Structure formats: structure tokens, C-alpha cells
Length: 326
Image 1: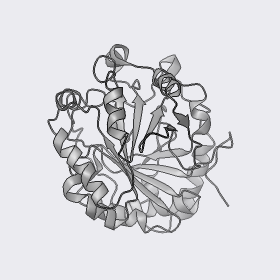
Image 2: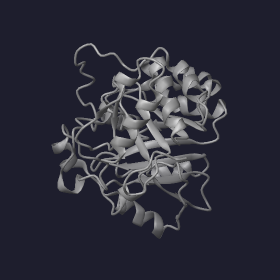
Image 3: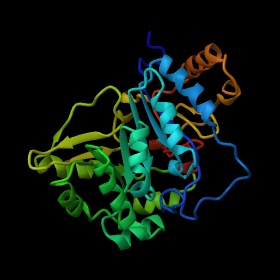
Image 4: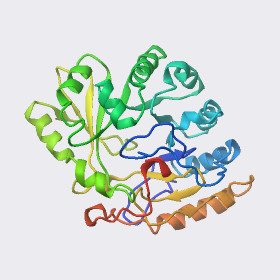
């Protein structure tokens, strides 16, 4: 029986699991001053990840996305992929990465069981890429995407955060890139977080504007699968690639919510912009807590709200996107 369901009949087949909040990039919309350690943190161990994933899978989750920070900074990252992929019931293991280690390691990740990959590429202009990310690594990231295809990935998803006055004029360049390449280019609307109010007001671009342009140019919307993420995906007969739009300010964005988040410190977050996290880690320290963990998840889901409150300027407890994996 499927058990991860809230009071609004939404079912949660998809877990976003953060394994670290450390990142080595300095993206303007997330960590513009770089990662700032807040004391010594003990991130979820491999055994804790195994126990957590097994309980989620037993309750109906079939997709896990491993996130950070930058998840590949963990020395045991390949082992994490193997652990999650070996969990009975988990059919898809994805990751989100800044791409800087892909060229060297993506083949190992593929062999470990990784089935889908999202790479952040905020500009196809190396200088603008450097300006937005704080790192001059454009060529390394692009080489990593090539390596992913060589390793056997049939499609790579590329995440681009839209920012007015920076990369919002690159739509034509991005479309040219995906015309003959099996890339799903995902434009993500800039989201307001606790530390980014001024940047949001200066650079926010409505994703609906891009959607209008795509529809006028003959792009057509695809039907979402039950365990897909929040993107509205569009295809065009003249393009090998696809376009995805993630628009958290769109009407009814939360109606199709199908994902839960667990932070790298073992807290359940019912919403990226929620006001609190639910502690799970005390039930992950040893085997034998399966039933207690299931009960805590069911009780937490009964409290999940119908929607976020971004439209009212309420960003919840999230200081920046790296803190719970975006």
C-alpha cells in the first residue's frame, strides 16, 4: 500500500536527499560569498542513508535525487550512489551537480547505478559563467557533459537560473545548443530566499515570459510522469533537445508536488520554503527503527500545507538553496 500521501491526496514518489551542504562554487543566487562552515557538522553516514532510503522505498518512493551543496565533494559519493541504487523499490537514482568533477568521475557514477544527471550551467558565455558562479570552470563543466554522454547517459538535464541583466538574453544561444543535442535545458525561475532579498528584486525574471516565447515558436508541452520533478517540459519537432521551465510563482505550482526533502543533517523538509524541519536522525542510528520512522513520516505529512507562501514574500527557514539541496 502506498503510504506517503498528504491531506490533499498528493503522493510522494520522489525523495530529494542532500548528503552535504558544502559547495565549492560561489553562485550569486545561492552562496555569493562562498561556503561558510557553521561549526563541525556530521553529515548523514552511509548506514544512515541506507536505512532512510529503505524506509522511503517501503512507503512508495521510487526515485531518489542525491543533492548538496555539491554532492560529489563527499569522498564516499560513489558508494552513496551504490547504496541508494541497491535499495529494493528504487527505480531511478538521479543527482544534481555543478559538474566540476564529472569529466573524471561520471563513468564511475554510471557504473554505480546513477541513472539521471542534472548539471548547472548558468551561461554559455565563459565570462558570464564565471561572473555568475564565481568559478572559471566553464570548459571543465562542458567537458563533463561530453563525458556523461560517452558514459552512456542518453540525456543530460542542464539547470539554468534565469537572471535579469545577466543571462536572460541567452535564450537563442541555448536553443542553438540543444537543437542537435539530447539535452533537456531547464530554465529555473529565481527564487527568493532569506539571504537573497535584494538580489531577487534586482534579477528576477518571470518564467511565464519564456513560456510565452516558446509557445509562439511552436514548442509543445509534454505530459508529466508521476515521479517527474516540477518542470513543465516542452518539445519541438525541429529540436533533439527539450526545454523545461520551473516556475514556482506560477498558479497551482504546488498542486502537483510529489517530492519530499531530507537534509544532510537528517531533517525532513516538507517544502523547500517551509518553516521547520522534522528530526529523523535519532531513528537512523541503528537498525530496528523502521516502524517508528514510518510513523514519524506519516505524522509529518499530515501537517504539510497546500502551498508555499512565496507570493506573500514568506521564504520560510531556508537561508540559501545549498542548505537543504534546492
